[in-house]
Image (tube, rainbow, N blue to C red; front, side, top):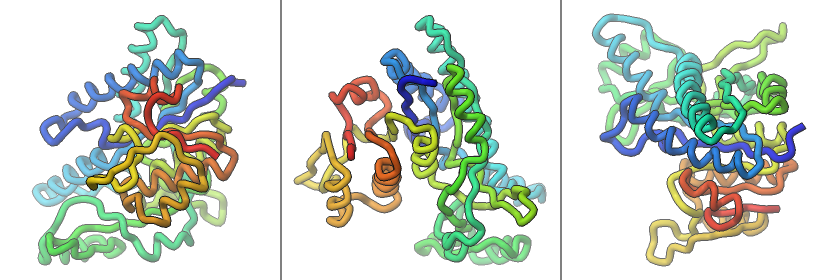
Amino acid sequence: MYKKLAVIAIGGNSLIRDKHHLKVEDQYREITKTVRHIVEIIKAGYEIVITHGNGPQVGFILRRSEIAYEHEGLHFVPLQSCVANTQGAIGYQIQQALCNELKKHNIPKKAVTVVTQVKVSRTDPGFDHPTKPIGTFYDDKKAKIIQKDHPDWIMVSDAGRGYRRVVASPEPIEIIEMEMIKHLVENNFCVIAAGGGGIPVIENSDGSLEGVGAVVDKDFTSALLAKNLKADLLIISTGIDRVCLNFGKENEKPLSLMTVKETKEYIKQGHFAAGSMLPKIQAILWFLENGGEKAIITRPDHLKKAIIGKCGTQIIK
């Protein structure tokens, strides 16, 4: 059994420095920087499981699919396949970069990527009211053609910019590959799992699994994974040093420490933006209220300082 375990959630946008560095090679360079800091956590005595976002990367796959559809009539790539593709591609990059970094430090560990399915409920209210926009914008004429070809898709007008497909974002209820992930961690592997929140699947009446076109929140799946592994620490890596009250305003106030009670009060006061910091905070609260002891939000390059309390925002019971 492992002594200490940290689940580290890396944002999909953190793999992309800016709009001028979108190539696969650019993303790999960013990953090599991040794993240097992750290795410092391993050197501090933690076993690690890494999860990652995939929003921009799924967007790239969908755009390629849309162009192929427009110009060559090729079929669209199903959304669940896009998630699986990014789990393999991003997982490969993290796995390779991490193994190379471990070797530099003479740490006798290996990294492995687990293509991970996450069960969701077919009765999840998210399926009745899809709100998560994906893919590109279409004009009215093109949207009608796509809707005809894909009657199960929901196309909505997006702030006058055109029509986009929207999908459900259901709650994760079970990680299908949980036993394998646990076994790998207990046998000294650094595991990359649940990329993009996991491939969403539903269970049929005969017990078989079926993929669905939806997007599961990466931070909520990370919290579920951390809870199931009884992790000592959940780290959500993002683009800011610390969580702030009045973010972006003149009276902005960075926070080094928050309790669950204080955090809930800040949510009531409207300090955390929906679609940005709020889901991260909510995922952490769920983890702490279901057996977790501590979570951290900070930038990737501050991970080493954060685990000893010198940087980032610590959220505790």
